[in-house]
Image (cartoon, rainbow, N blue to C red; front, side, top):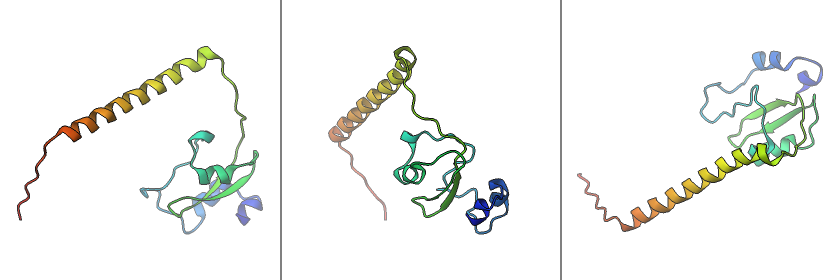
Amino acid sequence: MRKLRSGDQLSWVKANAGGQVDKDAEDLQNLSGSVPVTPGLDEGLKAALSGAGAGEIRLYVGPEGYFYVISVVSVHPPETQDYPSAREPIAKQLYGEHVQAGLADWVERLRSSANIKVYLKD
């Protein structure tokens, strides 16, 4: 953080800082180059980015124990959408949720009515 505040570029620090987690680590969150949307973030990351402005650098400790240095490039406030443009994505999301709920109910009914016996050989 000291190097970043003194003016060093984030990309240089990313390439040369010691003690970095392997980029192929299974539980590593890849935030590089992404545009995170606030409702999709976990609570810890929301708290770390809360009140951040463009050009700020924030430190975040993920649930897996890794430290993330996040450079806030820009901040876009929420915008209202008109009904025709918002209707289709919301309808798709609601339909998907309805299908998942129906499928979960069907699976539960099948499991409760099934007579399953497991025979294990020693």
